[in-house]
Image (cartoon, rainbow, N blue to C red; front, side, top):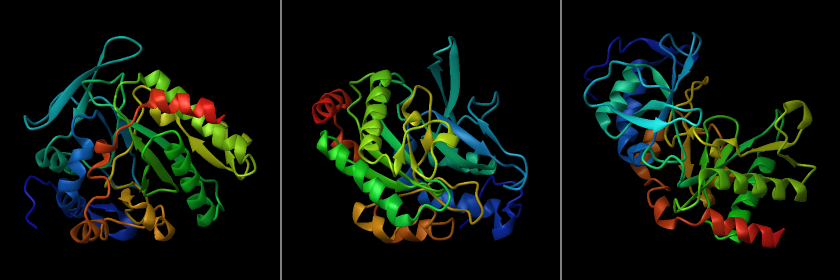
Length: 293
């Protein structure tokens, strides 16, 4: 694959795995068709590692001052006042530019830049402690799935390329972000109360013990979650990958890598390709959750 505009393509960004900047650029070029619909119109937070994952890295929220004309910048109100300016990835040129900037991880808002107060995605992140068995983590993902379905939402799942899974539901964008966050917290509290020996919503790690943390904070205003098909800045160069529920029993959280994720897409269509055609109401789901409780 010919790479244009990639400086220092042989620079190693994953030292333990000999993954270079060229490999990163090839990954994003290969997954672009599936990935771009999940990035389009959404403010991005970038996790950049110019000297590789063993070097200094940082989260870049605000767009830099000087960008190519092909890169879109969206102006989004800040809750603290003023405006923030965020990179939005709408095209292959932007993906290539971000790869060249060693933006290994791309994190997206659950709302679009034009409607930041009305998210169209709901995310519960399963964060397991060390030693959690995969069967327990998978069982928890299915319990979140079942609760979504019980309150009228359609659940989707992705491996995070890290330690857990994201269980996502598309929303119709009619409910404000604060109520969406309230609903997410209520849903997680409902599950944790039913399984208090296995699940928790405690924010402080020392209070979680050996229980799986149901993280709902990614639904707050300006918060993000790792984008589908994003690399992770972790040894092995893992990738966040949307999967079918029928695949969960064999899918590890970091089971796909920079070398295998694109091969998967060459053989299987993106399981989230029609995600937004299943959008539901967070307000109505919250009402149904109250009835369940």
